Amino acid sequence: MTKHPTEEELQNFALGQLPADPKLEAHMHECLACQMAVENYQAIFSSIKSIEQPVFDFDVEQLVLSQLPKSVTLPSRQFIIKTLLLVITVITVVTGILMLMNEVFGQLLDNISLTLLSIILSSTLGIVTYLSSELLNTYRAKMQSLNFY
Ligand SMILES: [Zn+2]
Image 1: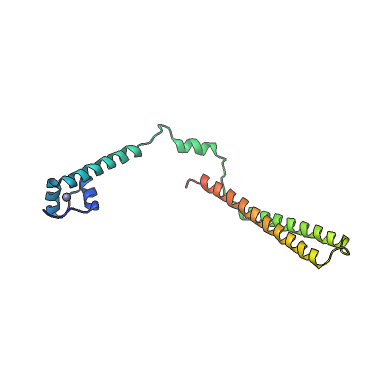
Image 2: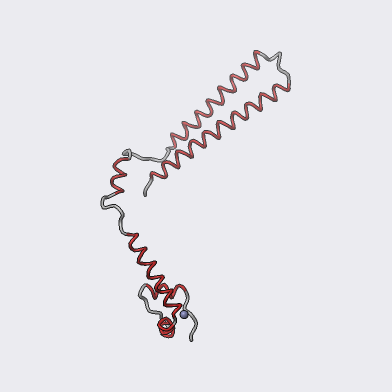
């Protein structure tokens, strides 16, 4: 008996394509294991075909698209610039407040509290930057999921 054909050859045979080598074709008519494999592949292929049939008898895409706002656009450069400006404004305001506090309580503050001040400032900056980028990423992901094409 010749050797068993490859899985690919079995799949092609299940799809109705005869193997190039007539020995393989003869083998598949004799070998029970290969016939079983071909039958399994045929069952799989026919079930895939039935899945590919549309589940809904109405146009889902059209229905969904009509529910969406007319202009779905990705965040523009303007949006990114606005967000950056907002972040910079927040940082400036926080820095201003902290500097003012330092001015007012300057005589009470020593080097340790200045270090504390810079820690607070840098963590605020970090948090604001992180939150902004997170917000932007979430927004982008949502827009991406709405983008069908
Ligand atoms: Zn075989």
